[in-house]
Length: 632
Image (cartoon, rainbow, N blue to C red; front, side, top):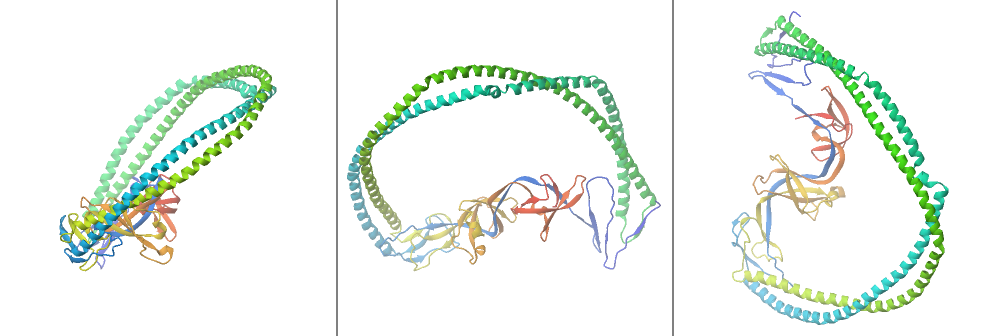
């Protein structure tokens, strides 16, 4: 090669893109650099960075997700007032605060009519007097009636329990006597049949596998002889062959060390010449023409060829070394396997012989015991039948008498039990209802007395008011919120959930929130689920608003920030999955860039399943452990 001359000139638009591609099998890493030269600007380089991920196999969580905007949470201060059947109301005469005000616990919020409050207090005091009289009457009635009902019930309960225990014990005793007598006959007949057949068919010989174990013992003895012969044959040549391989390996290892040292020097020489050429190119003004010296490129080529030649020589030595090591390993493995096979065969032969001898002994004992037992059973047959007939006759006679006595005691108990249960239920209900009425009235009376003097409802806590529920001349709503306080230690996010999915979640479920500007996911809880839909129409279009609340006690989150929410709905078990960004989809076709063993990549068509926004299920096309290329 005498030289290569290249001219780089700027176009009329003063822009040129110069690409220099050197394809050399140096390593498995590919670096792509594009230089963009623009008039009046320095050279800029854009580097396309990629990383690799492995296809995983395991459980993949799938859930419901949605987007929303963060806002500060709030908590209500309610006035648990009930007007009962009074027909009275409490009017708001003045509102002393507005949304956004900061208040302290005990500050005035709203003022109500003191006359209305006094009227309600008088109403509740009269109602409490009446309720107390009702409660006292209910308690007196409860005590007197309960005592009589309890006495009647306990008297008959003792009779019922006693008669039931006696009846069940007697019936069980009669049945046990019959069952035992019948079981004795059945067991005896079964044993007679079993022993007779076993002796006739020589079952015990088969049961203890005498023939099979004898054959097995002979087979194991034959196997031992064969394994011993194989080991002895290999043992004669093993030591000499092993020494020959070890000497060859040592020699090749020395050659490999020298080759690697030469390789390192040639690599350094090649790199030095390549950097010299690149430095000369970078130092030239692209607006000028320049010539690269042919001698530099020739030296680069020669250095590269020398490096390649040394790589081939090194690879050849490595292959010869590996072949020698493999042969030594194979020889050693064969020797060890032969030794182990001989030892195992010896153990198996001894074990098989022992099992055969034990089986033969067990067989002889079983035949002897069967003959003795058969003789005894035949002698006892008539006695067992007589015992059974007597037990059946006695059971029939005694059962009639026991049933008659038990029915009389049961009827007496059941009538008393029904009366007792009904009386207790009614008495309990009367007392409970009267007490609950007094508790409710006292609670309302306490609330009203707190504001009787000035008619002021005060703040129950420190905080900033999120909203005020009333205006002047409104009427207090029973149990309604007076004000709502901002709750900066929490952040809420609203998002919509389809009617199809709403039944699968509940208040208190865990949700995972991703907020713009925050790297990690934040764990929150579902705090409210709207009972009315936000949209209507077909089932597929109906949605409900769901609120998720997250902790913001450290103040890391701000309002009016975009956020996404995910709720785990199901877990796909033992599936293949990869990051969503590793999959490229065009139309109905999905592909990934899979990395091959040699470092190059190939486009693979895959079939996808469900995803959770971060990872996607791969149903076809990839196996666990496959490496895929992903742009960072």
